[in-house]
Image 1 (spheres, rainbow, N blue to C red):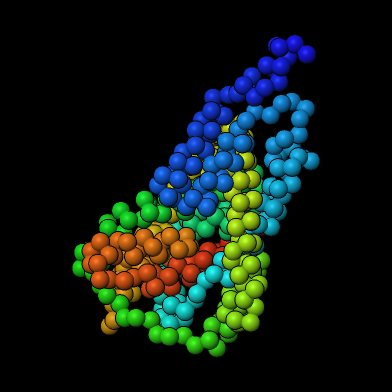
Image 2 (cartoon, rainbow, N blue to C red; image 1 turned 90 degrees about the horizontal axis):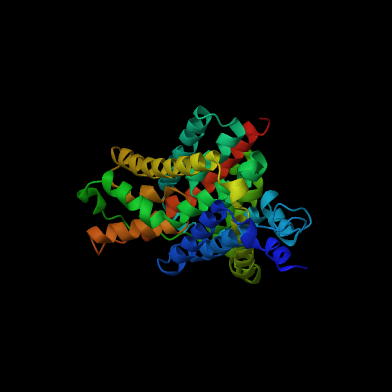
Length: 375
């Protein structure tokens, strides 16, 4: 084999400017994870996956996630068939405490209000010429829930799975950057200083009954959410029953970590510049940002609306936690609240709309799947 043939069979010979751009994006993701500590558990697998996915393959070699029979193809199978998201929901359920939501049920409304971003973005995507199925998949980015976005996209618009997944996880990681300006814009200093009463203690009986009853109600309303919410509430029942702690511990540690690694890496590897860098991808990123902003606004403004009728006022900041980026949105609420008043502790209150948002985004995905599956 001549040296010329050797060079022709290297990645350098087939490298395009788009591949270089995507590799730089992957490096930026890793930088944000390591230096800025933005969602490192997500951005490091995705970032390195982007780099791996943009090494140009050699003709005739089965290497990429799109080459049937390759190792990455089989690992990516869990994304394209919607297998990984329910497993992540199982782990989330096993680590989630619904106590604050159960102690103050009216805060569930904030989680529901934040889903307005999903449906407004759905309408905007239709206006821009996306099909109904594609528009529904793009809209779900506003829930700030990567697994839900991946699950719905795999069912409705698998051709847009890569851009939607990257957009959803990017905005999840950028919660501390995107949300605070919106929270300051739509609240006053007086509102940000509102203190809330400590939540009541929720009994073990309530905690055990809740996942069963909540699943039945949600699944009857939106059967399309069965896979996600079934696993979420299953994981929560493992935790709250206290008799299956080994299973709960496995779900919230080993299982969710393994699945997060596989999902993040393969989603990143799906971003080959030749298939990823398209005008549609640009629109998806723009619409995803708009969806996330509108969702945050919806939660904050609805909290202000609720205060018109409540004797005991709620701090409108916690409305921003209605998006389902758990627990980052709740942490941002705590951070902004304590900047105004170091003695104001909002984290536990913010977790109520935060976990309600997880349920809300899964229900929204189920509704969109049921309504748009035939398109």
